[in-house]
Image (tube, rainbow, N blue to C red):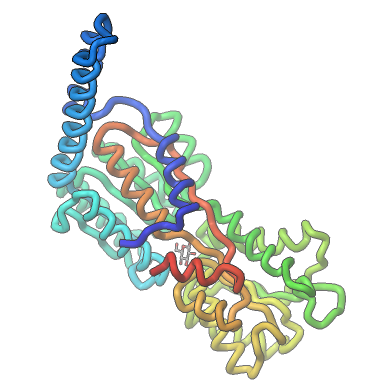
Amino acid sequence: MKKALSLLTVSAMAVSMLAGCGSSNTAATTAAATTAAATEAAAPAETTAAATEAAAAATEAATEAAAEAGSADLADKKVGVCIYQFSDNFMTLFRNELQSYLESLGFKPENISIVDGANDQATQTNQIQNFITSGVDVLIINPVNSSSAATITDMVTEANIPLVYINREPDAQEEERWKTENMNVTYVGCDARQSGTMQGEIVLDLENKGDINGDGKVSYIMIEGDPENVDAQYRTEFSVKALTDAGVEVECLDDQVGNWDQAQAQSLVANSLAQHGKDIEVVFCNNDAMALGALQAIEAAGETVGTDVYLLGVDALQEACDNVKSGKQTGTVFNDHISQSHSAADAAVRYLTGEGNEHYIGCDYVKVTTANVDDILASLG
Ligand code: BGC
């Protein structure tokens, strides 16, 4: 299990401190009541050491009881996790971290079940139904189609199972419903607009602001993830918006869908390079897997990142960070799978203890360039 960057840990802690209200579990409540009673009983004699000691002892007992209640409960709890597709590089990092963090919290490995939706919503819907039938206590779901969220939410909440969505954010109307209908449903993830903006800012920070050939505009190609996914939509829009907001003129030479996939991106970028050659100054990829594919195409075309073209991704995969370090990728944006998986597991626990959650639990992206890539690589372990 990895440790989050300290900055991000602090922001995750701030979120978890904000999150949650309502009743706690029985043992913890009882223990807390004992503390209150001891403090009250001690009040008239507050100057005596005995009273202070009694209150302190009760506080300690309350903390211990709460901790015991928590871990005893979790060891018996079953958690079902649905991942949209196991072969996705980023979601592989996410799910491995989620598994080890859940175990560290006290869930038994045999009570953690993680399944592969194989990028097919019908398959995933069946898996959710099976989890409901088997009586899981909480579900963590990375939907295949975000647009299926309303159906999934209904299935799961009708079975009285709390639900934590991860990575693929349902739309605003769906999230609003969780609030108005007071559902035990939350979303844990980052705001993809921020990652797009950061990609654009990395270009703006270059000495020539991305205008390699000095013709007064930045000519780019965009390689998109699955367009059904809000991460793809926002990254596509906000990377370019950062440039235009800063007064930089842009020209889109090509915009293609690579479905988050390295091989698809490689062939798309190869085609684009064959058509536009050195006119392409910036290659924006919605994720690093596709940036790795783009790099293969760029190198095969005999071009060099940093002099002929700039290359941007998102995620901070280890390999992409190595490329940033050696100059083969201009930059990336850390999509903090460590903080997100921990927050998702913590949210699941807060449902199990009855503490509850806010309906949105956020996380920050981090820009990655040669300036900080060593820190990011260190935090990835
Ligand atoms: C990541 C992609 C990943 C996608 C899956 C995005 O947030 O950046 O790498 O393929 O999530 O939904």
